[in-house]
Image 1 (cartoon, one colour):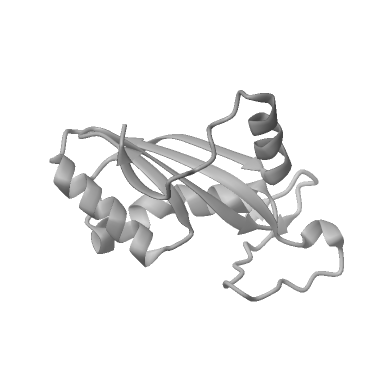
Image 2 (cartoon, rainbow, N blue to C red):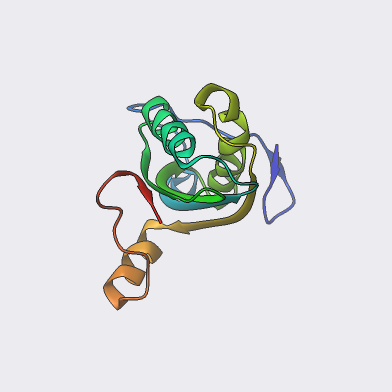
Length: 141
């Protein structure tokens, strides 16, 4: 459950690729959120970090790009969610839930940014946002 501004409780909603969330209120329809997740920890071999990030991207093709070093990484992707709270909740679970299956280093989340699509494109247009995620994939810092 997650709290909303009015103090009411509601369950998180997951939307599978290709499915549509049916909501009566247009504010309840999923939107796209640009997520940047930063993690860091003890040094790990670069080859292992790259392989783990590539495995994560293979398992979850929504990942746009990741940058990495031997002691930190940044993952950027688009998330479809009803609101910022839902998008952030999914992002905060990503690293821990896939640590075993992708062989990710035991790093902790040290940063999270979740912005809506309009804000992302506004930042790009004004020249102060992150560059578009190209090329897609895992790249060294």
